[in-house]
Length: 119
Image (cartoon, rainbow, N blue to C red; front, side, top):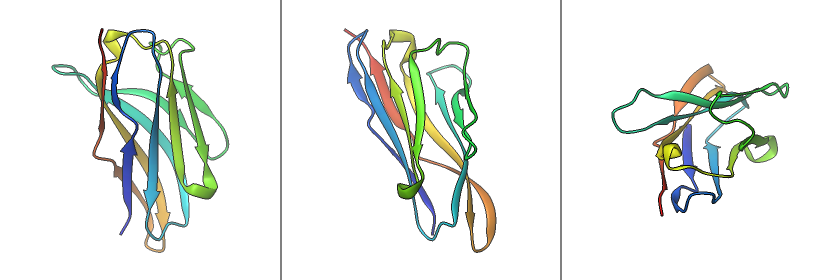
């Protein structure tokens, strides 16, 4: 059974940093396109960053050079390094991935990790 598990969230002061991890476990053939999303209270879920196996990366306009998405294919893990955090970055951050198993490719969501930026 495939699972996506996020970790690394927490409380941080404005200007601080956090590193989120998204680890895929189970009988995985490959981790394909991975996207970090976030959802703040009362707002729609939005895309933060996308990483493809070919190395194509896209960021939401609000990132503006503050975040970096990367992956460790050997560990089926994707990271989101977040620097210069602002209170408006407060949200639940979710990992979404296309994962190939023996049954083919499916889309999976993690359970989310809370990020709170506050003094």
